Image (cartoon, rainbow, N blue to C red; front, side, top):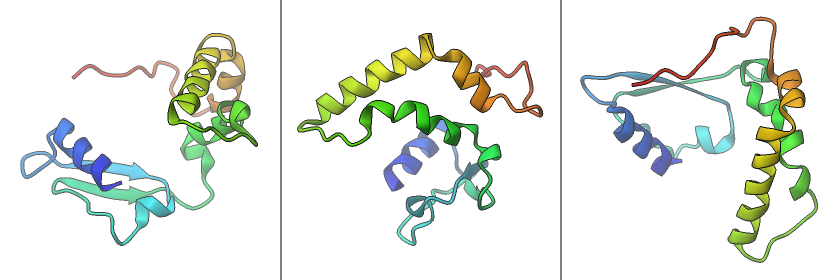
Length: 115
């Protein structure tokens, strides 16, 4: 987690002149006493039991289907299965994804901003 936060801070320019509020769930590795939050980043944790605030949580049932009760000898084998599943999700399962993540309060015109 420390490496992720460090890289995030560097890529976003967080520091003395730029402050970022980072919202995270309450996963144990996010809240560990060993986590070092870089300068310029402030963390706010989502309330307990609030999957509606993090729609991606509802996608695990679709994403992990080919991984359930399987083991992989090499990380490359796992990556290949995940890559194939992501392609299926992004091309043929768009309707189930919408049904799981389009909340009535979610803005319809959300799109990533450049910059």
